[in-house]
Picture 1: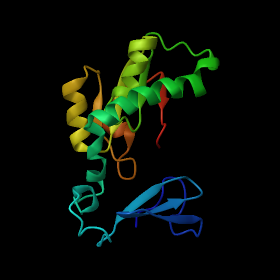
Picture 2: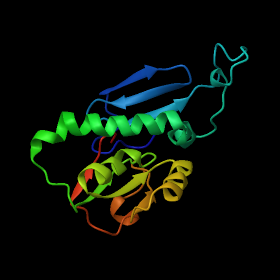
Picture 3: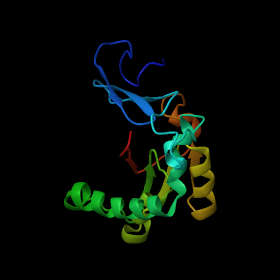
Picture 4: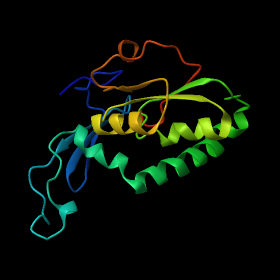
Amino acid sequence: MTNAARCSWAAPQHIKIQTYKRVWSICEVCGTAIPTQKTRYPFAFLPFSDLKKNVQTAEGMYDYFTTDVHIDHAKIEADQFYKRYLKDSQIDFGGKSILDVPGGNGFFINWFSEHLGARPSLAEYNKKTVEFAKQTHSFDCIVEYDMNADRLSEKVQKKFDIVVPRHA
């Protein structure tokens, strides 16, 4: 297993969370979460595709980022995130370059452009989502980025006024 971002992954400060299709190992020190796909699903015999193994890679579990329901969720999440964490901060987003890591489908960070005049960019792990964002948005910067393996400075050559690491 790879080392977590800021600590030794071998340290005993991690917890395991069992979900239907995965076991998540989460470091309590730095927050890094690493999924491991289960080999068997107890309800796979039922005729519903969501209960069957349909993801072959860790990255593939995020393919749903391009669905309509997740796009709608990203827009609502941006509005709520701003109101909860940033509205009272007096930060002027107008004309500022802003990077969302991980940026998902781009609709979260696009909200900052539409409502606050920011210049959005995103870095995202899922290849399908990166391609979707490139086809959907006209951001200056949309890159594929694995925060557990890549150096952001090697993937993105420009500087940003604001970085939003909301799921990092």
